[in-house]
Image (cartoon, rainbow, N blue to C red; front, side, top):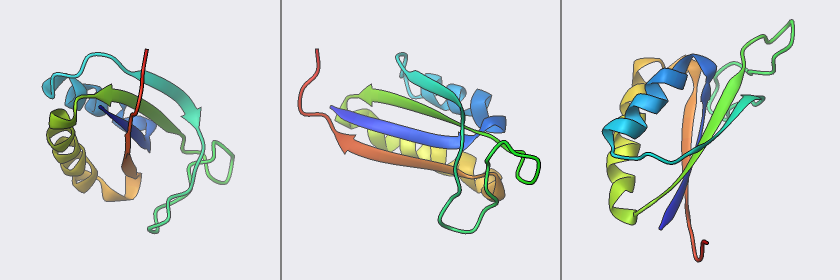
Length: 97
């Protein structure tokens, strides 16, 4: 099992949800209005007057074999609007209940 944590501009919410559905992933946890600044040069999303954009985050726990398909969909989404920002991180899940 793997955990995939996805941080993205709030404008991507429907596209991220579509990527999950098309990858056959149903369960998820979503955080709204998270703040951040990416390390590769995009604008900060801090929800302030100076930096009004906001991020969201979604985490899924999925079978190892679904990771590649999901990451491929997310990479395409990120390429379509690189300055908006989208990152995905994958961790091993050792146990779950």
